Length: 115
Image (cartoon, rainbow, N blue to C red):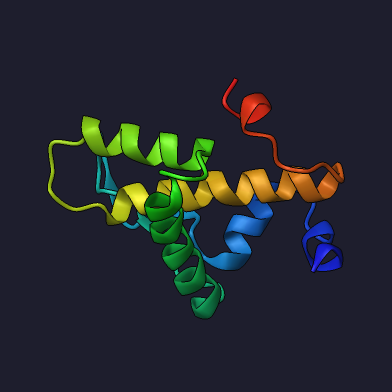
């Protein structure tokens, strides 16, 4: 698994491979329509990561982590009822964390990550 993650030159390239990078679909003058994820990548990986965020949120009572802290903070700040956009942002944060941990061969440490 590490060998596959190390082939990407950045965490943004990993996001593009999964298909959660943002795309501008319509732009005219000063108006820019809302951004959507590209969905050009691996659909199964997106589903697994989405379920992972849900599991992280449930397990956070016993295993705190900065991904859930970010997810809950954005959820409290949101005035809209849906959480899919927040989950996509949390997936982006999770992928950046995984990329960094694999690239530098480090274990996850909540005390260091929340700084």
